[in-house]
Image (cartoon, rainbow, N blue to C red; front, side):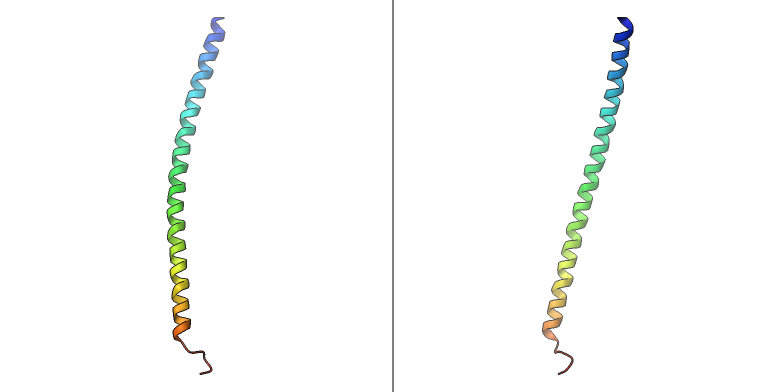
Length: 66
């Protein structure tokens, strides 16, 4: 009986360590996701601004045959 209790305590300790490690990993992944979201937002804004600049240039310029 005593050996079984010790075995359960060891398993519980390993599970607690694993849970802490997984929690740490999830926190790191959440930070990475937040950084990637910011990067995507900036890239989308940049693409939109480049697209808008291209439209303005094409409106202001005459076609080559004029």
